[in-house]
Amino acid sequence: MTAEENERLTRVGPGTPGGEVLRRYWQPAALAEELDAHPVVPVTLLGERLVLFRDDAGDLGLVQRSCPHRGVDLSYGRCEDGGLRCPFHGWLFDRLGRCLERPAEADGAGLGDRRVARAYPCLVRAGIVWAYLGPGDPPRFPHLDCFEAPGTHGFAFKGLWECNWLQALEVGIDPAHASYLHRFETDAAEARYGEQFRAAGAAETTMPMTRLLREYARPRIQVEQTPYGLRLKAIRDAGEHGVHVRVTNQIFPNAIAIPMSPTMGITQWHVPVDDTRCYWYSIFTSYAEPVDQDRMRAQRIAECTLPDYAPRRNAATRYGFDAEEQRLETYTGMGQDINVHDQWAVESPGPIADRTRELLGRTDIGIVTFRRLFKDAMRAIEGNEDVPSPPPGDGSDAAAIDCLLPAGADVEGWRERAAARRAAAWTDVPA
Image (cartoon, rainbow, N blue to C red; front, side, top):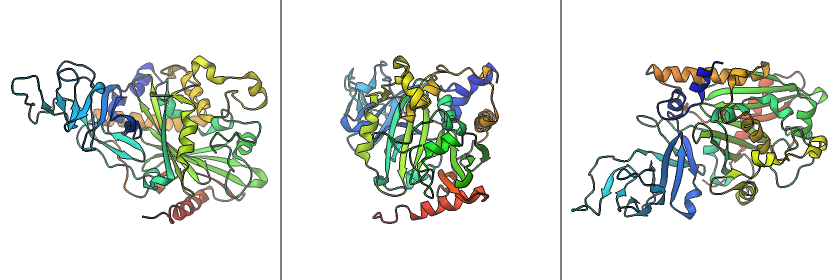
């Protein structure tokens, strides 16, 4: 890859090729719960400094953070009288960016229907506030299981990573790394961590994923294009246990869907704050029992600092690295939280990875294929053409699952398992 190509892929501000692709899709802007304590929250998204607020009618607004009058920070504003009021001179702006009042002026009147503040549409789905920063009307909101599940069966959270969004995304479309980066030398878990890579590899076996990944560390990886983006299959021939198939998805442009356990999945967006920082937004979706949201929130809050959701383990603390743990317990020596492992992997190459120095292998096929799709989308926008839009349907094309099939079975047997899991989900939840 050339340096110019890397720049095009990674820069996200207004007018940049990559930023213009990301702006054509709904993007997470904040957790809905961030508005619980105070109805005004500063947001930086795709390099734009914005402010999110809930007006006194309960409607959400997302507008530029600098007041159009004199440029002060509207995240210190007052929610009142149908909008957000600037503390400097009392100018009042609504969620459409119109100035409703200028109380210090002679007549106190606003500026009519002129939209003097940059404003973007937003909505709430699955515990996240979503925003559309692109031109024209927003695209169809994607049909994914994380949005179809009842509120009792999902949990959303986020975390800040000090790196460009692309290297954060690429760790999620690299199935081979799980056998190394997330390798555990024992199969007993600390109770405070989730089930991923600790649960049984599939409902048909008691073999933990830790052992399966450890003992069968050279998967065959297949990648295919889908209506949502890419499907990645990591296939491990597990001897007498059968064939393990792990299906993950890249949901274009900046999300992934991965299995967490036989009954839970994670859908995760990697959202640029700016060129050198990003948030991961994860929605945990249960296909069986309701999610213990308080427990999951407490687990994640313990690992970060508010209000930025910055991880306590970071480069300054060397990610909690312990050489003795690395020798005896984990491949990384960075604890049992796999999120920390991923954080190290994406932050340590630097804020923007130098891809001109990469030596890619066959296991990087998902990364290579995604980059091609993203380059195609950039060229489409530059040629005034459409980019791929989320397809209609029930989201089954984006299913993520672990399953163990009989030796010699068709690896596409995962489809039947995924369909059965989804058919049985949420049937006893009141409408």
